[in-house]
Structures are given as structure tokens and as C-alpha cells.
Image (cartoon, rainbow, N blue to C red):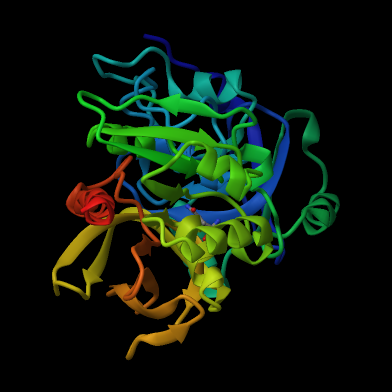
Length: 379
Ligand SMILES: NC(=O)CC[C@H](N)C(=O)O
């Protein structure tokens, strides 16, 4: 077990683009970093959050005050690296303790060059972001410290999340196969826009052999694997930029191949159907968001990580180029569209995370729905 006292003495400052700043201590690597400041309310699952590619270019503020208590293990990461561009915690664990822990979170952040800050009032920062909306931020420590006017000017030069096209920066370059666990029943082509490791695993558990394809995959690449179904993953950036995945999805809808999308995949289905997407004021990030499945009336507690949403009518089905579509799921906190379903073709998607990494397992039935669509197509 290791602990680090280095951060206890080294100053750091967080500067928001509207000029508000917070002084704290360096946590993880020292230096400077920029991104969109967002907050996550998850009390557990910091490893899954850090390694979720959808957080690329975001500085994540944890509202839970104690982070790092269970250290870092080798089992929970959702990808090969940490993707958040910066990390903000109130009170990091001094002494991590867990049977799976291999090192402290501070050490892991340092080893991966992730600049963070601790010891700031994360509640005040979260309230600020909730009132003013997600915005650009910088964290500075060590040699990067300078007067605040200089730092603020740097923050204001950083790129915005709106209009950012980021899938290509996180997705696999090479295709790979995740074999079915047990007897193979189906083949799925999964378009990787920033996929989390747990997603193909949840499919593999249901007898699906998952062919993960790069974000640049064409319809020929998808159909070359002879898929029973096609999946579109989560991913970072603004869905308004995702023209290639939208065109690919339209080709899949055209052929009525069973289709399932998660998060970015839901936004792409929205766009493929002709709906718009928009940026939420501060997004949904956490693992206890209430969502109603309008097809059954059931409410599920779900894991979220999205800053954008689909703009679709809630009250009645819409006519789209692919037949009628309806909003299948809504967030009960704010009525944001959380799922879409086609009524005349085997396609659906959700804005949240049924793979539940980290998070509650209430929404696991959605993978079973995907299996049912594939079974239905065979019958
Ligand atoms: N987790 C995701 O797929 C996020 C989708 C998109 N980047 C958003 O922020 O809304």
C-alpha cells in the first residue's frame, strides 16, 4: 500500500472560463490541462468514470467528497487508459484499502499524466456549474502556475465541446472480436465510437460474438461480418458532428437489420431519423438517474454520462423516413429523451448505460431486448 504526501503541499488552481477560480492542491500529475468542466454524482465507480472514453476532453468534478478509498485495481477499467482530461476531488483517500487495490488513485493519475486538483469546495463548484452551465476550465500546478489573468486567457483559448468531433480520437483503429461466452447464438457488428469494455462483455454473456469495428467502418465492413444485429456505442463529442455514423446507421435501418444504440448511439439514431440534438445546460452524469420505460411504465435507476440530448416529441409517435418512431424512455428529473424506438423496424436505443459500469443493473433487460429483436428476425 502506498500513499502520497506530495500533493498535500503543492498548490494548484482551477480557473473557469467565466473567471471564477478555486485554489487547492495538486492531485495526480502536475502541469496544466484544459477541458469542459462537468460534474458526476456517482458515489462509486471512479475507475469506470476515469476510463470511459466518452469523458475525453472533459474535466470531471466528483460531487462525492471522498474519492480513491478503494485505490486502483486492474479489473475495473473500461478501456486501456484514463480519458478524462482533468480530475477534481474534494478529499482524496490518504490510505486506500481494498483487497483488489494495486496502487493509489493519486499514483495512477500521475503515472498516466492526468492533472488533477484536490482540496477545493466541490459543492460550490458544482452549484456554479449547475447555475451557469458546463463551461471550459483549466487546472494549473507546478511550473504551469502563473497570474490568474494569464491562466484565464489560456482557458478561453481552449476548444469548446459544442462542435467537437472526437470519436476518431478514442475509437479502435483495428477491428477485433469479443467471443461469445458459452454457445454462440448471434453475431453483432459493433461500431466503436468510444466503446466501454463492459458493453461487448454484456453482449458476450448473452451468446453474442461481437465484432468491434472502427468508427470509420463502412456499410460493406459491417455486412462483411454477416451480422444478426448492429450496435452503435457511446462516445465523446457533439453528435451534430457525427455525419459518418449517421449515414452508416441509415444504411443499416434501410436493410432492417436489428439495431441497438447506447448514448452517442442514441443521439445518432435520433439524427438518422431526422431529429435534432442539442447541448444540455450541464448534462446528466451519475449512477442514480430515474428513467421511465414508457413501453412498460416501469421506472429504473440508471447510469448516465451525457451532455447532449435528442430533440424529439414526447407526446406522440413521429413519422420518419424509416417509419414511425417514438420516445421510449424519459428522464423523470427533467423529461429529457432517454430512449427511442422504431415501431415498424427492429431498432431502438437509449441515452443511458445499461452496461452499468459503474452503476445499477436495472437496465440490463435492454440487452435482452436486442437479443429478442435478433431472434424475431430469424423466426
Ligand atoms: N456517453 C456518451 O456516449 C456521451 C454522448 C455525447 N458525447 C454526450 O455528451 O452527450
